[in-house]
Image (cartoon, rainbow, N blue to C red):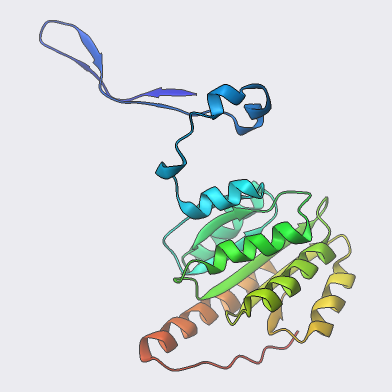
Length: 211
């Protein structure tokens, strides 16, 4: 896609392009390798570069609630409902329909690399993606990264019972929820607010969340 904006016309009637941007379909990289070597990674967010290496779709935002979702449409809906209830998403992160445990772990690394993140909402609909794979990734990430950020986890779909059993047996401090609206309104937004106030007051918050 080529975007030319703005175009200006001088007093002589000549038209000039003052700025232009080109976007290329990442799915075409395998047949346009020479073109993609021109990509200047220094102009992109470091976390977005790391996401690309692991085939994750990540866009950094200015909020304080980390999001891990499968599917671009669901990710946008998740951010919308967080905003609806007064929260601010810290990122757009789509792990895709066939993410591995390693990719989920890397996704958590990306989210927690942002010091502004005060809570994380995991919203997975297991159609293609298996919920137990997401659960394994959450557990691995929590152990590897020593996660102290509270997590609200909404899982629905394939292998969801196995996923809940894995999380329950891990003794992680995760608040599970089946309803997305409740997960956003009553849980992750309020928890993020509590963590933010605690950070301002320089006090610790000890969460003991039931599954």
